[in-house]
Image (cartoon, rainbow, N blue to C red; front, side, top):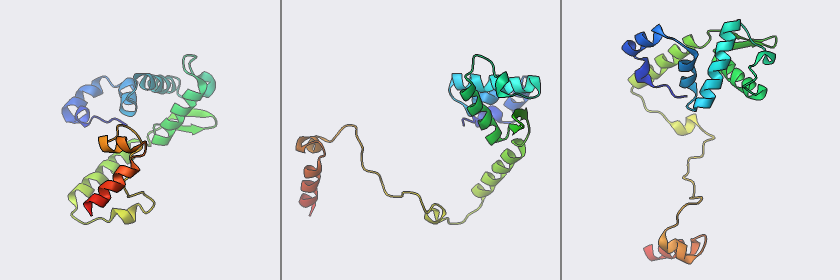
Length: 157
């Protein structure tokens, strides 16, 4: 999701509202031009026809891709899916406002948080390097560099 907040502050929003379109909505959710285009086409088709089934998907968009995008629109609350039809809905606006309110409240509160308790299943240790360039002394000892690391550890003692 790529919300560029400065595009939706009061003054720019007034200008955007004069020419609201599916392309702007799609660009919020997709950075790729192709993905945004396909999402916008599908949203526009739903708006134009009042509803859409997978049989009505434009030929330029693969059915499986269309289903994935339409289901994503359902997941975020732009569409509803009932009886094999996708229709516009507005389950999106109120929750998005509430999320903004929640974030603002979090910013304004001063309390300590124990994130290790909040995310008990998260890996908290640093991962080992999995590739890329090796250090000169590690590269000299072999592919793993284990010997050089052991020598450095012994030298440090």
